[in-house]
Length: 397
Image (tube, rainbow, N blue to C red; front, top):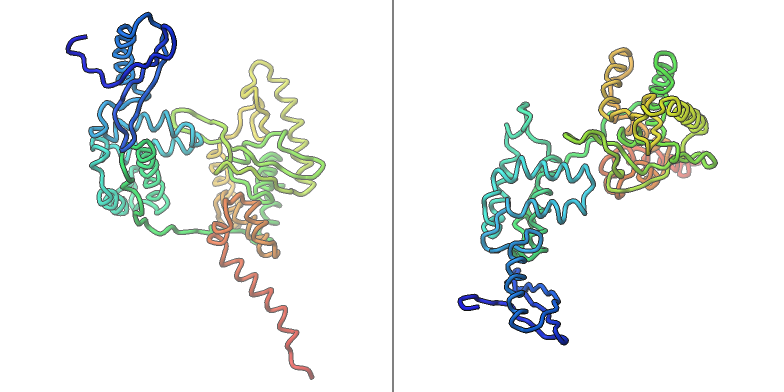
């Protein structure tokens, strides 16, 4: 053993049984040790195994950084992805965060040591994102404030993990000022315009497309949530619909099923006639899948909005069809398919529904999001409600 430096030690715990304690240095102020129990005939043999054990730990990419001071963001990224992000993010969030890191952050900060990335670097980076010609799609204009926020969140996530793993003392992303988010309520149809919309759908579109749009209006579900609806989500007795999953199209992976935004399940009540149509559609789909036999796709799911082989509609295909429908009906005000969600919320507000009910049906994480998006409409409704009390104070004749 001459010339070998041992930083750990061995401890005899029984006859021919030793505990190997490998010393792997520090993570910040915390000392890292790994242990292993072995059965050998002598302490000398245990020490030999300790040397091998320490070397094994130092070479392990899963548990050991050989030199904390020299760790770069590029070194950390694959470990953050495999040992943190995959366990904490949905498939869509993981994809988006990794895209932001790989395309925006690593090209600039990847080769920098973690300890050398300072708050001022992040501040300048966020400021640069807000300049013109920073879009990766080569289109004119600036990045939306929400995009800047999402890029920053991806950066903050990996740096926060560096803090949790004691690789740095404090995140350089802490308390960085971000651009103010703009809450856009979008366009919405009035009750009369919705009636006209439904009339056009009945006269000019097939029953499945008609039902899809009607359901969008009465449920306020997002596109990805609508195309992910299955028979199991229908409660015929209560006329309720469980919204617990969504379909997303990930680059390189195709269509996948994921949990709803923020992993928030919700139950919404829908009109009886819509429920009856959904039940009928479910029966049609089951018959089509039986006929498809071995050509059936997505064997573990029975999507209501799908082709005869069970392949669900892509969320973006709904928008594409809607754009064509808008062009075929120029007298209808042009709105996005997503604006049917806003239409649903607006109709409920004008009907005097409580904001908490609207929040629940929309699937917002908190009432603040609902108020920021629809606060002006809620205020108008409140003013109209207040006017009803005026008659109590009318002068008596």
